[in-house]
Length: 82
Length: 82
Length: 160
Length: 160
Image: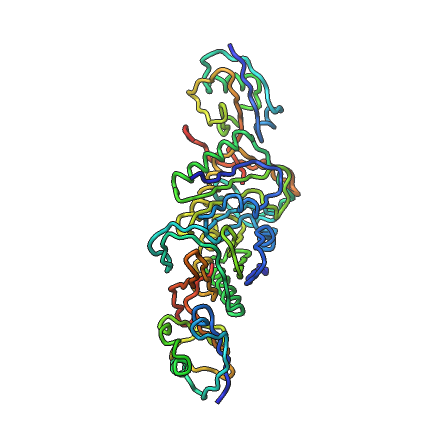
């Protein structure tokens, strides 16, 4: 088990009703696995999950990827800056 | 006969050794005719005449055009601003 | 030679004169600069570049960023520009965040080069297009009818 | 609606912030700005856009203009832009003249529009290209080897 930090931005922050959280996860957890855990803890996230982007250590991350120890994770919608 | 003002810019000013002059010209003189008169008065202009632009009343002018009364005329090389 | 690259998420007013000066070298002869501003009135209808438009008024926008990742992605955009247009000399990419009102510049992408026929216009255009794809910044639109987060529609691929 | 058009030959420093503000409307969301600067060091060889280049150093440039005609031709360039890109909102065309040293912005062309996919980049590019064809401004280059007038090679046709 190891601890990761998860941040939420824009609509995801609104849905999660928090800016960030810490989570104890098992080793060798994938991004897809993390999503399942998050939905179990925060059901409101499920509806927007198909259009949610996830980053690990400030790089875009994808379902099969393993989450490294102490990862900085963020969930957010497609970007709309400019 | 009527009087026109002729201005010289950039290399043409250098060649003509003046910024401007007044000239008494006959009615119905064309731009081509004006060039002949100018070369007669200022022979140094001849060498650069093939690459000289002429404007009448702040519009580009061409050989066959007639010079209107009281015209503001300018001679200059192809532009190089920017 | 080391060419200047400026990239930042900022709460300060954008100063075009200063930013241009910072990416101007002795060999520089041309700069293409893009800026985006808050529109107070949008008349376009339909969809363009992932945004659905209907005519509406905007009171202001509230921008937020995932700052460290946003700055890292701005640097990546600059590196992509340098790879595609090796003649580009200086690059500035700045996104302003916070509460921003109509007519206010919100974002700037500027590219300099020795001459204007070297791709600087295309490079600046590419820069703003990419920023709107991969730089994690979002805006909430505050209108007379209420607040709404604007969402893009670009999904980055692995390696982006 | 009346869209702003700014055109001038000026001896003052170019203020990009101010010029951009002057062509930004409530409906404006995008601006493409081109600026040219004095190059202190030119490394290009050969010929491009009518100018013969060989590597050289420039101490400074001295610009002169046939001011009333230059401003009239700038307005014409702006009108040509509006005809080709009717979505363009504000246009600024400013040429600085006088004695100008390396790294100094000498010319600015800026076009604004509601959105960036409306041709603003092309419009600004067209603007600087046309300025270098028909706006009567000339520069003398002062180098360690001596002074030389720079001459373009564009010959306007009747009606231009």
